[in-house]
Length: 514
Ligand code: ATP
Image (cartoon, rainbow, N blue to C red):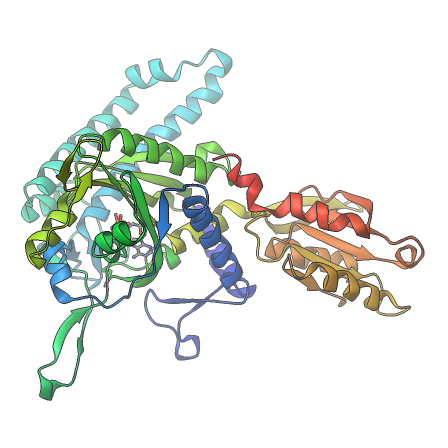
């Protein structure tokens, strides 16, 4: 069922010009995608929502735009050359490759799903008198599944901590995890695989230099810390935000734009006094969750998930997860990165990277809280949250309405303007409305097919408002405005459209909730 929805969503993204496979006429390139005419609008709106929430709403957060290519020593210093690895495992029969940690996480999710099913069944059976906590603490099937989860989880954390690749394989084999393609448990050993892409700059004759395509945008911020702090006269605490492309040679790339080899990140590094990092970590956790929830999707679609294994640079880390059609998945990471990055760069470049704190009267290396979110994953979150198939009844007949219930502020097209018929001066009147509003809002003109069909087309791309121009419009300058989610229609003056759209589609309404 969930699989079905996901397939439909992917089809919908292609059919309506949101997302295309890269190099489509050559049958695509694995885990690389292009954004179409509506996709790019949605993506830009997501980026604007993030960027403005960072640099407009916080006077101590500024932005930069650093290059993708960086000095190769950056990646040595950051630890990526030595440690940016994923544990991979192959199935010998299907020849398919998997991430060992993902197979184990999926296994844990399978048992969590079994528990959730038992709870749902019991809830139905017991009605109002149901006590979930008590049920979970006493039901034998729940207890057995929870026991399995605890056992797997314990071994998993230990194997990750000790970098024990054989231990990871043992969990997979002991729990009889099979390859979904071959259905067998015939696995190779687990190996480490570095995710960075490399290329060369300069010609070979001159002694070309190996460089990397950045696997995260964060390092561009760290190497500019001094530049920004000094030229911007920034005082700690302060943040530097950046949006840009990142590249990872992902082993498993089968979930559409969830895991891509070329993707975009929105990262913010917040520099704080050592010792105050946990306070800021909690503050950013809360702020970032509010940012997600302000979009209006149901609260139960979000959760925090603390990391089982901290990255080499972190002393605390959590993910914000969203309920995708294929389960709860990470959309954003919030990490307390200590002074690891700045100290490492100081060591490798030989220059002092510190802050003189006038209040304390001393120098120190700032600690860092990072918020890191993928634009593409956020895009998928929006599409998954917004995609709806509604059953309607019309003249005694059942009908399905496909509608993207995107938050109006993020929707690619804000308003469609439709003349009721293609004559009598109605098209000119419709165009005049667009000419007045197009400086502030993305509007679309549509005169083809019946009004009903036109409404459906706009529902399918998530346009929050449709305006119909009819003969009465020519007499009294009023139009019918139709609201996407409720399908309610009302008669309003053309002069009021700006105010209605401004209130209904501005980011300001979302910002007020953060
Ligand atoms: P995962 O465990 O899913 O591989 P990660 O923990 O490695 O993700 P981070 O390094 O914390 O991810 O990256 C920060 C954010 O960048 C993620 O929360 C995600 O939104 C995004 N991101 C990371 N890798 C990819 C990818 N291959 N494709 C799309 N977005 C990605």
